[in-house]
Length: 389
Ligand SMILES: Nc1nc2c(ncn2[C@@H]2O[C@H](COP(=O)(O)OP(=O)(O)OP(=O)(O)O)[C@@H](O)[C@H]2O)c(=O)[nH]1
Ligand SMILES: [Mg+2]
Image 1 (tube, rainbow, N blue to C red):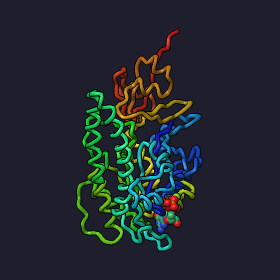
Image 2: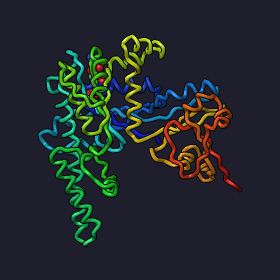
Image 3: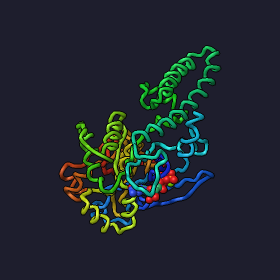
Image 4: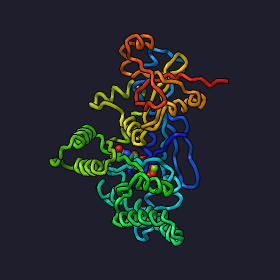
């Protein structure tokens, strides 16, 4: 099952435009709308520059990319406006869609477009993020308070487990009451796993997608790079100011941030790949923003890619960071996990310098790894296994 990123943001921030760009750039495998709340769902391929050169060498019958799922949900705006008075958080229909997401892609508008009014009357991504966060934290607060009620009753039995749980829930309650994100609360791994079943929205890993005007895209990318390096970028004007503020916030939170022009991306997605790349080059941009969003989203999910390569298929596979060789084998087939003997591992970069597995063995570039080997991103793996009788 593909892991899911929910695209959320204020009304008219460019969510659907981005979604369309993502699904075209990433070649949708499936797309459908669900339930009463309108949602667009699509599984997209994760762009991986390693597959094409491998396919060049192996000339396989099939090349297979890893995938992630994006959901574009309408409805947050209405919830934002009504619940401001009622302090009740998000509507249940909307929630259903984002509760189960593994991470959030939060679209923040900085683009100027006179034909697209902003619900708050002017452009201010920092305020918009506050507003979205308020919505999410209030929803989480309601969840936590319901749980506190239940746990308080259970704790009357004197069971220590419930006392502990209550203590953690109260800490969360205090943080959320101050409109802090649950992810900013210090928790031990045991405490964090205890909270998993609450599916808190502000616990989810998040990326900020700044939807910027096409004209400032280059400058926005420079700013993101500078801030990532720890520079301050105080001396900017206009639209760039908001971009700096969000980038600094992201850095403080440990969240990812990407700048795109959703409209430009949607237009580029209509072009043939070659034309799109030519156009990007003319703008001085290294890569499609949609590709960046997919790749950053993929890493946000704590996933890495290992590769298999042969004449039948060149393929990228997803495992969670830290997975050991047998678990990776199990992604291919449970028999391979069960009968795991060894993994022959060649680094992609090493393989490309020699061009074949035989040459890699000869040059000592292929390792034999056992069941405790932690698979690394970019490993080309061949599993030896034996399922016996
Ligand atoms: N200038 C400019 N306009 C954009 C950009 N992205 C989106 N728009 C326009 O903004 C409007 C809203 O875009 P949508 O993608 O529908 O926004 P949304 O967030 O899905 O809106 P709701 O689903 O109604 O909440 C459309 O008219 C888009 O053409 C952009 O990067 N630049
Ligand atoms: Mg939309």
